Image (cartoon, helix red, strand yellow):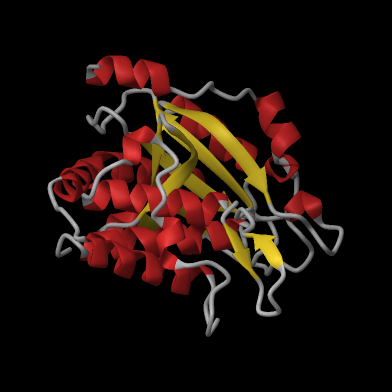
Length: 269
C-alpha cells in the first residue's frame, strides 16, 4: 500500500460545527467563567476552530471533561485536527494537531503534535523537543497566535517521522520489552507497590500490525493496552478486574506523553 492510499484510507471524517457542539458544548461558550481575571482575553473556541479550518486544518475529534461544579460550558475540551495537506509521509501514521483549552481561566491554549494510526482509533500525542507542546495565553492576538503555533507544529512533523523510522529500525530483546512495559505500568499506576496486571500482559499484541520486536511495534502495543484498557488483573484484595480505559483529558495527555518519551529513550533521543 502506498502512502497516498494509506492516507486516503485513514483520513477521518471532518466534523461539522454541529458535530462539535454535540460532542464538546464548551467549544461554543459565549463568555468566560466568572473566576477569570481582568487581563484574560476571552475568545470562543468556535472562533479558533473557524480560524484553523480557514488555515487548512479539519476537525476530526472533540471531547470535553465532565464538570462537577455545573460549569460544563467552561469545561476543559480537546479538539483534534488533521492538516488538509498531510506533512507526515509514513504509510501507517498521520500527523494531527491537538488543541486543549478551557474557558475558566485555569489554563492557556495548549497545542500538541499528535499521531493517528489507521489500525488504531485512539490517537497518540507526541512530544519531541520544544515543538511538541506550545502554550498560547489568553492575551494579545490569540487567534493569530494559535494558528501560527499549529502551522509551526505541522512544519516540524518531519521530526516525528524520523523518530518513527528510527523506532522501526531498533530491535528490543524480550527483557528490554518487559522493561518498557514495567515503565508503562509505573506511569499508569503511580505509587502502586503491586500493579493489578503484569508487564507481560501489556506486550500481548492485539493487532497483526504490532507483531514484532522493534521499538515502534512494542510502543504501539503497550500504548493501546494502557490507554484503551481491558487488561485482566486482580486488585490488592484478590478480586478479578479489568483495567479501565483513559477518558480524562489530562490523564490521556500525561500517559501518552510519558509513553512517547519512554520510546524515544530506546532510540537514544
